[in-house]
Image (cartoon, rainbow, N blue to C red; front, top):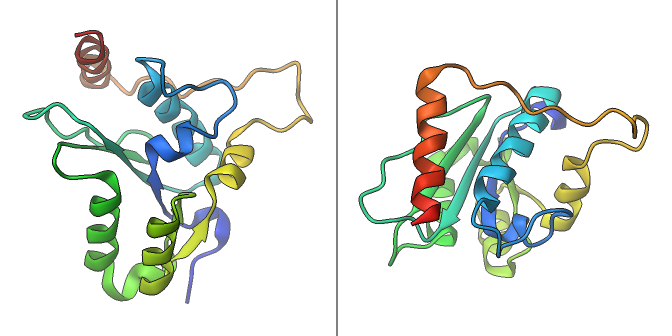
Length: 163
């Protein structure tokens, strides 16, 4: 039996989603960090988890530990985020129908459906990431860092992006 939609875990094509997010740009050197902050707030609000895949990691960069229900995977060339998502779907096996893949990439969506996962377009998911219009005067606050290790991870990510 599939879990309720609000608790369903997500596999997210990170750069595909950034390209469809209001207020985010693929040209911004901090685009991944900004998306991760929004996803952490969303997952905390929805009681769900997400694994986000980004292309173009620096070779030798260390994996990012899960934070606030969100795990970031920076995929080093020649590998792609699309390929990493496909492999994760294969690894999930019989659990795949419990997951939703977020991407507007036709090949990623096709592979997800073939494996039995649900698919949500990046455009649709981006709208759900935006705080509701019901509280326009109260900006959404990202979750606070969980400790010195998380702060160090963010600092390392920003330094890597600056180089």
